[in-house]
Length: 360
Image 1 (cartoon, helix red, strand yellow):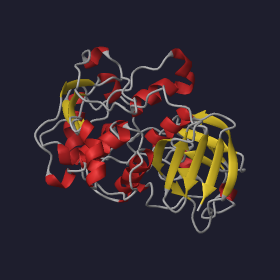
Image 2: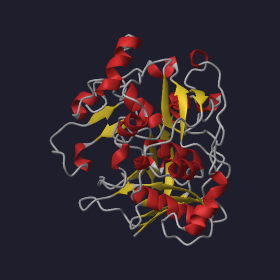
Image 3: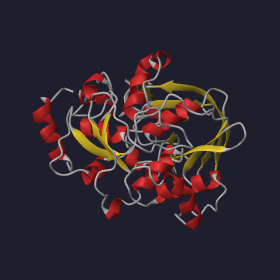
Image 4: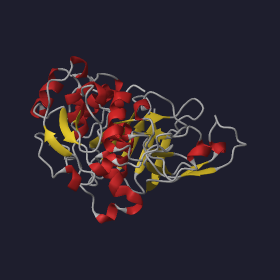
């Protein structure tokens, strides 16, 4: 595996353990603040310092991605690179700000973003012991029948957990750290600037949702959405408020030639956080119908990730994923897939009765 050099030292030094509210959409996070020591802050990450040495030129877009996400226009995986997801995020920002929707960092857009130029692309943080403790599932099985035997469908290792916590991928964490970096409790690493979202209140403790929000750095306080539009041609999900103002946009994977997106008007029936997954082979065109039905326990590596938003269209929903790097780049079984962190944000924005439009 590409990041083995990071995992081995972590096991040696961590004993191979078995396993801020910064969501204001018009004021992205600027300066870092020192938190309480990591051994006293549970899942909260201690910020040690702001931006480290300049990033490699190949990661030049990371600061723009960070700002766009803080403003509600998700680029999906923060990897510092230009690409389809960044283009879509820029279009969302431009639409919401009355700019030409070019999807490029043109003069107007660059000038509009200038007010957030002091927001650092990365931070140096200390890994809290509770976060590093897992539990993890190092030998995560590929077959659903084997997954059904697990008590939870958790992350494979600390590297995967850190990647989701900072809305990135292992390759990017490798790129912004040195080969000598140790990934373990109490160690300092460089990460994309995705700040702690604060500790949710007791109302969010059902099914461990409070810990999931902290593990994904998603605030429990989200704006209310009155309408959700899933746009097949652009590959995005957009959320609008009561005044029809675009308040959030997420890259999405939707449908396939076998299970096309069911175009039309639907409504949200309910939101299930950290859901069990009822695996029914008859609903999957690529699975033999003779296989037995299964119940898979919750976890970020489950088939629907950490959220299932049920729709009035039977067997269809909006949900998370166990493969965030495939969002917008792979087909689905008809449903709408988001990264786990984007799905968690959307779950906080919607409620039963919210209108959902699937369009070309």
